Amino acid sequence: MKAFRTLLKLAARDLETLRRALADQVAKDANVVQRIEGHEQTLRNEQMLAQRDYESARAYGGYAVAAMAVRKALDAERVLIAQETERLRTLIAEAHTEVRKFERLIELEEQREKLKRAKREDAELDEFATLRTARMKS
Image (tube, rainbow, N blue to C red):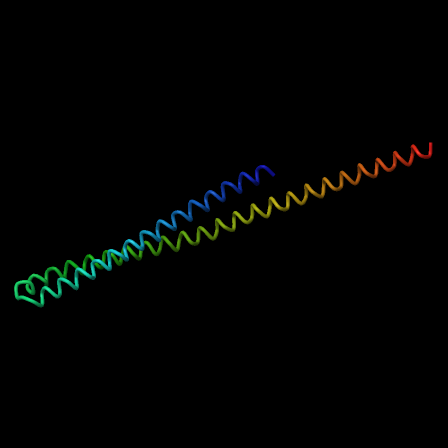
């Protein structure tokens, strides 16, 4: 019984570690989304500046190429985060199943112990009743 409780604690700890890792991935994704939005805003500002004068328009061509590379890198980072998030969700589901399995094993062990105790108490009561009946007859 004690072994099941220890295994349950380990499984629960692993589950909590995975949940924290998932929360970290979600935070990373939110950070990348925020960086993408900031990048898009900067790109819009640069486009507006390029429309105003000739020199800015000439410089914008090189900036746009670099900006596209940055955007592709951010999108690739987001894809990696999504893959890791999905992997962690799968691991969390498996770890949750493991925790439930140990909880169920503990419940079953407690039921067995309860039945043993009840059986022992019934046997003691039967023995007591038998002894009492024997004394009464004597």
